[in-house]
Length: 101
Image (cartoon, rainbow, N blue to C red; front, side, top):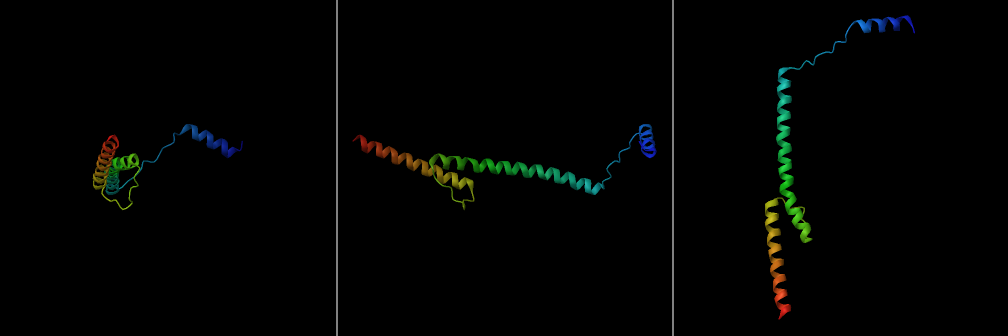
């Protein structure tokens, strides 16, 4: 081992390593906290939106109906799918009555 390296290891063991504390401007710290809070709200809104869209998708898959890409409002889409489902059920009932006659 070279003398400089031995000297380094000898000194290293005698003095503890001091870590530098992060220095952050209070304005930047407040902005970071706001980003964290707003990010949580955005994630909650995205989850709620995804849950709202999931029900019409499931209903459409059960009915084997394609969902139009232009469907912007999930509530209207669900309402239309419910109407279509009722119409299909009514049509099936009428066909069953006609077949039994």
